[in-house]
Length: 398
Image 1: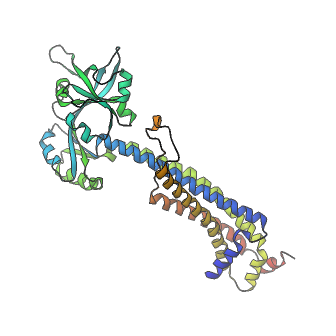
Image 2 (image 1 turned 45 degrees about the vertical axis):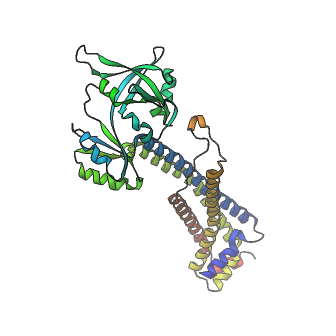
């Protein structure tokens, strides 16, 4: 093994004075560097944005949600849920699509979420652009996008209603006058444009057909306990639907995973092209070193020895390029996370620096993909070496 590796190092990049193979060798190394670097950087950016999206979704909705499969009142189990040591905070809510009327005859269909407004700041991980300290029972919280669409600000009077909930007397929905007390920014456009938090007192006035709470949003003390707690709650409360944040956003998570696979498949083409170039490099080396190969055969080297020499040489060339690409990508991610050298428009992405996270699994996957391509390319090239006879190789340079 040491003998074949030593010869492979001597043959690496064709040795001295071998122009075409040396040039092709450097092209192969550069191609591997670009390929592994591009894959890891792309995956790290996708990881960064994915982590941010998940963080915002959990920050707005919690880690878990309990809803009733029947007309069972969730208040019956709320105290038991809230006292669970694994749960940091639990929040009862009612939800209904309704209409909000703003200034200048502006109106918007929104989702009203009726909660205990005292828990708004503690439970939801959102930023408040503007707010008043004392929130009255008539105070509501709206997203900044909705505030812009309705041309409203803190202290403005609005009218809200739920068209589904009609009064028993004349069949018209109840109109309730409210005051804007908070304007929030969740950094999720759909939430900022369509969700309005109202107090339970207001909810009871406009949700005439909704007597019970719709669900309980749960925030965990430690997110690592999510699977264990979900299984326990499902066993304890079989008449209720227990869903984690992953269950609630299954379609989004699936889409992000498919996007990752698609990007990985496309970027692997760079490594594939570099592998083709590696094959041509090794074939050129074989042609230039054909006399030396003949001498090795004459000295008793077997076909397996020759194949190992070419295989080791291909792995050395490809391995150098892949290693440099991986190290360079890791360094860039570290520098970006410390110094933020790559800016992005904050008015679009709500952050000023490109988020980058490299996961160990991504590095392992890239290493395995590179190793497979490099090994297959080297094996293909090594077949060319073993078909050369001793007499042909020794007569090649005569």
